[in-house]
Image (cartoon, rainbow, N blue to C red):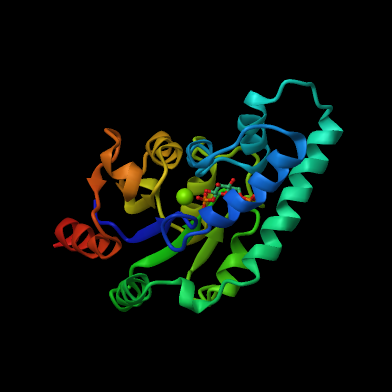
Length: 216
Ligand code: B16
Ligand code: MG
């Protein structure tokens, strides 16, 4: 089967917001007196906001009510969104921008498949809201990665079957989601070394050769 579309994860693939997630969560963790570091932050990749908070609270000694957790996650999001305001098209590498343009030239349909409820806000800030044919994100799903829902919705929006869409991810939870949905998947960074990844990528632009080799 030829690959007619690509569903890209956003954070860690198209742009990098982990430092802002880290800064915002660190502020929350300090406030409640819980230990938090870069290694814990790495475990939050691709994971929803509330699930991220639960991971951070693993080291918390007390008990929090659902309402208190909700307040903390809202507070984190406000800090995070303020930090996101400094993002601009300069936060997209030339390689990413050129590869997306080349995919469009080749009539490959492209979508975003992100756990983030801030995906459209980020895409607008980095000037990429218009280039994608569809966006599936934290606002249109009820189950976060590793559930395949976000990618299945993206494929549906592109009017393609899972087998026709390559998923590009940086997180293992995202690769698990792609595999569970029956999508072929390419992995960058941490996800490149994961055994469930079909196409390990060293750099973003290599998606062009994955498509080329598949469709020739
Ligand atoms: P928000 P992705 C994910 O985006 C991030 O990797 C993850 O760290 C974050 O917790 C999640 O979005 C939810 O983000 O708080 O903005 O709704 O990698 O799936 O694009
Ligand atoms: Mg990611």
